[in-house]
Image (cartoon, rainbow, N blue to C red):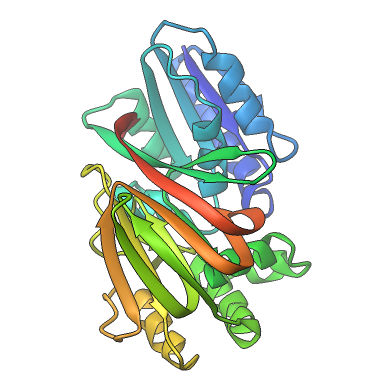
Length: 308
């Protein structure tokens, strides 16, 4: 039995049209499946939890949507039994699919899932935040605080988002929102504590991103050295007095290069504690977690079993 969790509203309804093609293929091959269609944020997490909570049998769950859909599915999983995750990208950014080099054709993705040849046991991350009440949120691709979080937050609330999603790649949407947030951005003082022992202080941090996979924001390669099988987070800190240096960082990421700008710092660690002197926007896999001043991130190594 294959369980499909489908976001029909991903990328202006693209998820629905993709699902129709997939369903036709499933019926042609006589595959035994069950589908769960999301209607609102949180549905995918709820479906994943219902399917796996207390279940010790082998379960195959296929997410159809964008990185946000995968994020919700991952966040809802209960690792009681053997769980295998498949993914058919249907979003605007598709950074996970880009990192895994999945086929752009959804039917080809489905056939790889139905007739798997390769599996990966991958890392995922956990973001912890909150004061009076503590929240934990898993992430498959990346999490960040600062300007990249503000960009993700603005995209989720951008009234004209659908207009820009007509562009052929999600990175241009992200770039447009990034220019707006770049104008608004204000740096913060703070520090990051790596693996509980190494403290790195900064005075002009615009954003800090933690990566399992190299890409973020529809193709921006902020962490070229990220390896989803090494049990480590790749940390990128943009700390600079000159806001103009951010342009170079964004362009380098857009071109898939590691920024040589001395304001960009790179680290690897299993866990990190970030403190900002002022609250800044936080995101996980492009989904907004509102504003926080303190967050903790850690890598859960070799836990996510995926068909690639």
